[in-house]
Length: 214
Image 1 (cartoon, helix red, strand yellow):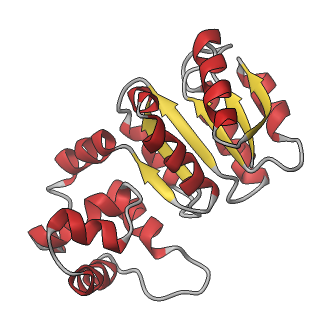
Image 2 (image 1 turned 120 degrees about the vertical axis):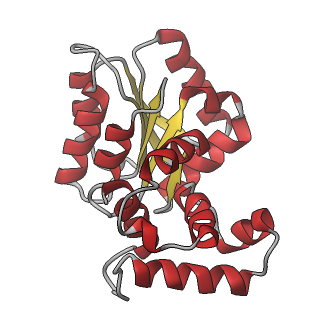
């Protein structure tokens, strides 16, 4: 699996490079600024990009902006964004297309190698992975929003791990319920967030987007 790494701190960039190559990724580019990232993402055959939010030359949201523009050119390009802090605006913008293949992780999560590698693989396979701390932050600010008020407390509990990219089986284990019960709750979430069945849309992703944007 071919990956592009964008991180302006040389030591972390080298660490990500070594870590991913040790887990059977092929690093096609490891860059330290926005223009170099843009160039790397124009290459054919990139399976996933791991991108720091804040990069030169602006040191604001350069990495994210380049990644979003790359996804406009190639819809669904898998991108895992790394951030030092929970920044809700970035999570909303990254998920705004509803296309999936996105991740938002705090940099601390890289130290948990198995979790980080699994997240990169999940995103490359079309999944959506949000850091649990990001989810907790979003839940704390979303409680009074009208569409979310339609959800029962249990449905809200199911939606949070959905946003983390968890499968129905994993959600069932976490909440100590059956997979059948989880499937029923997810169906109710789709109905209450006005997400009808569609062959072209990823309803799990759209449910998280609705949660972020309502």
